[in-house]
Length: 309
Image 1 (spheres, rainbow, N blue to C red):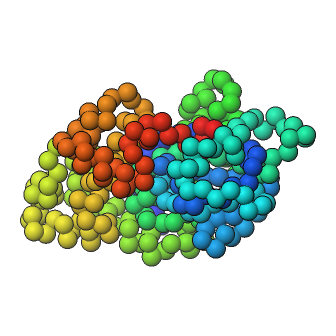
Image 2 (cartoon, rainbow, N blue to C red; image 1 turned 180 degrees about the horizontal axis):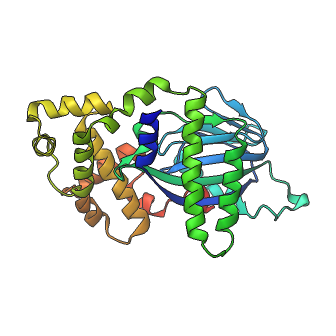
Image 3 (tube, rainbow, N blue to C red; image 1 turned 45 degrees about the horizontal axis):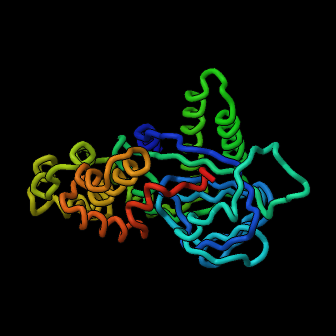
């Protein structure tokens, strides 16, 4: 329990967005994913997820860790089948954002969703849920979570005094409730035990912080070895032993995550963004970006999330 409390105390959360969404036409999306962590509450209608197309019941919450994909079907009929990029290019055909109170009986949707998205980082460096390497999963019977999602959405729709602070407090509580659900239901126990080892070694935290602050610079194993005060030959083995991945793969993920953020929040050129995150060769940056995310960097700048219908 002490280790879990240490994990929770290390987490920094950031609220990204929330929406009520009407599904106006049934659709099946292969490898649906968001770049941020997302909770999708089925308010009405039907939904199905995963390779076996398991049914979502009204009140179920689908949790999508950032960049972790799953097949998703919204609505009753088979609908149109699309991949994730096709769906986001055509999402207005299938989704309609609205307030919970804007219900038109003559134009009943095939499903209604409440979505909340957020980032969670350990020590302000590590994308927490992604680092645990857990797949998307469904949360059942979690009235506390659904109530929090509704409260966050209500705050976001109004200009109450203290709105931002309240949303941040609710988002912190939301993350703790998700973590508690994982623990209480013994989900991904081995992954949690193995992939949270970095909380026990301050030298690894030093490496994480150094990487975060020097994404544009030299992050070779030789440099990381000096940060952790271990040998260059050992640092790769040491990092992988505690995190499950080698340091250069982790560095590329952090660079690409930063690139996504810059593409979606700034007007810098793709060449400048590539350089800002450590890629001097723009063509190579673009190739690696498309390989990792499945779409070109230029399209990422225009890409909206489910929260922005």
